[in-house]
Length: 315
Image: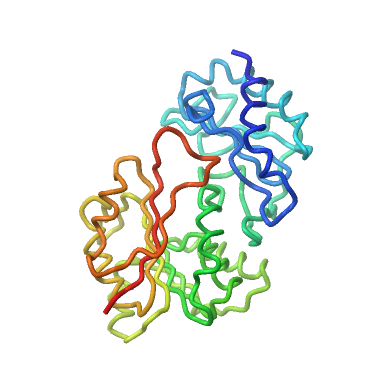
């Protein structure tokens, strides 16, 4: 396998993404969509992160990395470092350490406070620790399309908010207030850091630690109403009190979300196991679909896995 040529073809197909603009991070190589199952590479500004999703690829990892470095020499940007992450269930070779940590294979590691851009939003990313970097690159086109649709001057409730980038993007595109709920104190701290990075004012009341489904009930009892509710849960989650499954609990949760909203609900499902028709069927028949999107083109393979929609509530 000539990996250099394989990567070059994928890079050529994404040449327009390197144009100067408001985004410097996207997928460079997407598994079977670019001709090689189990292999992905993303560029984050000045760094490239390679991810291996199948254990068999560790036997040829040096060939993969060498091909990537050679192909990257022709990119319009000069990468300062290349990192490799094991995304398989099993550990890789001991030389490659724990699966939750990327390994530097060329150049140098990014600084601890490294930032990138997506759709005009700056974001802190961690390309070394953990399996998630802090930003969802596959949401780029969806966020771009949503920018003119945000209710100007309105408020946003961001459930399962993660690092708060949906809220930051909405606030930078005309919305006035946000409330972020997540079951991780660590990601809420990162969300606050992203607010500061983008020059947004906030206080501790803008970030709520706790179960999003339980907080939906509490906020409704308080009589809180938002212009936009963002409901993008993990496909499956469990905490001490509750278990959430998209297959079984999504429609019921959307009914609760409707009680907190007077304009739009944005919903998303990130799963190959949920079809587009199934996703659409989860929503009340009275809701009007104002926008529908899938993962960005640089992430696409044979099947669309991300289904996302902006729904207008009709009372």
